[in-house]
Length: 112
Image (cartoon, rainbow, N blue to C red):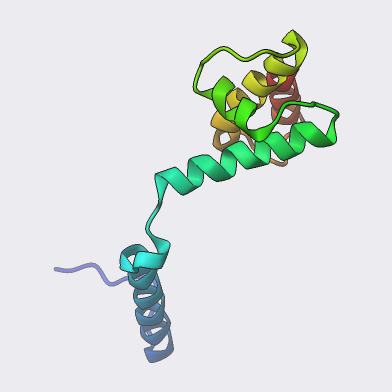
C-alpha cells in the first residue's frame, strides 16, 4: 500500500516546477553560463588588486598576478603579504557565513 503524500500537487505547482527546471537547464548548458576558470581567476586578481589599491597598496596588477603565481617581485614585504593574505581569504570565502561575527573575524584574521 503506497503512502499518500501530505500535500497535493496542483497544476500551478507543477507548472512552476517545470519553469524552474527549464531555467536551471538553460543556465547549466548554455555556453554563456559555463564556468570559465580563466575568467574567474582574472576577475579574482583584479578584485584583489583593486581592493588593496584602495587601502594604499602600490603594487600593479601585473605584480599581484606574479605574486599569486608564487614568483619573486620587487616590492615591500608588507604589500606582498597583503596580496598573499587577500588571496588566501578569497579561497576561503565560501566557507564563511556572511552573517556570523566569528566568521567576519576569521576572514579579518586571514587578511591581516
